[in-house]
Image 1 (tube, helix red, strand yellow):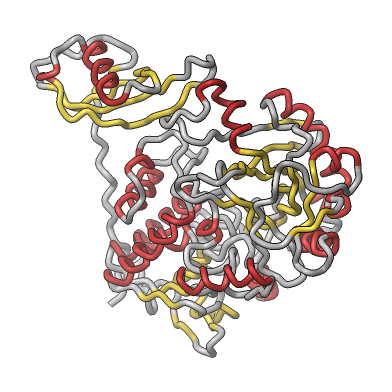
Image 2 (cartoon, rainbow, N blue to C red):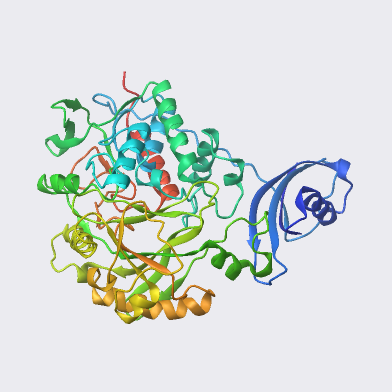
Length: 528
């Protein structure tokens, strides 16, 4: 029989032997009666410094003769069978079309391909190789390609990120997402660590392997191919026009375009697709020396090879606003992430080793429809643009990002750099970030910094560095769907993932793409 044992605690140096000893003690049996001990989950308990411990859940197999002890931490594992998908009987005109290769689009296309549907996938940006080269040009010279950049291209915005695989959703499909990532090259630890991450360097290879699998199963992936219009008939989609003057005939389109496809949002809005305003958050990137964060979180154990670089998550609720850390990147860099000219947009990125000098995180404040100025459904986009353009102005109109010491930000003066050097992938200019964010955002940031400094020692250090601005925390719109996950205005169009307002990260976006693939399979017969 197979069982799960929870709340097994080991020291940092305990390793596999100590964990196996804990298993035998918990079960009160000899080691020859237990087989295939496997870590299911590993987390770090740093509440009692310096006595930091690892906490595990493990699975193992027992001889059927063994009596399972009555213990709240021990349970027999009931194997859950994956629900079998049966194709529907509605005819599909053409092949299913997936627009976008971010997590939602990739996983939707993968599941469709695995079930014989041979999807066509189009991506406005380039493949990983072309994309990496063009992003490097932008970072080094400021010359931006508006179609292939940190936001657009193979793998979506997540390709240039930390590759976090944490999620707050409770969905069995999360296991499939992790399993597929592992199959295509992610390390074993993503299957059990409480806060798994891949890193941009590993994720780039994984998305290429996923694309190759989609193609091996009969799918077609077209890069530098942008949806510029839709063809409709009697309230149903029947095709998509692309930038190379071609028409892809199909009555099944998955819209997985990401949160920055502003021109596509505008095109769809003009075609009568309903959009609603959605809250998001804006602010800055804040950088500290990674060793400061390590010491704050781990005390004297900081630097222990079993721990790795520390992260943090901070949250502060005001009457009308919430300030919080977001997309924290231990040992990472702040990256130039614009997709439109004459704007500055920041994001965070780490490689798998997370071995750079600085830790960075978004420090953001919630904003909503009441802040956007009008009731227009796309007003959130213009709200983002306003502050991105002001950041460009504040940085000197030469694609330099405005940076500022934390103490200078609090005092409202420009100043210069301190001990924390900017990791930003482009040029920077010391400037007052108060000039490129709304007063209610900077006021909330200043209130939160005092509170966060009490929660995390060193967070409020005078030389901590702010880089402006972070505006793309999530989509500023939502495209309403019906109970079949279709757009309410256009049958056969499936808004998906973060860009459509239904996800908030790699895993949740991938899960949404899988859900849509399953709905398509249940509805339509396999195209001939």
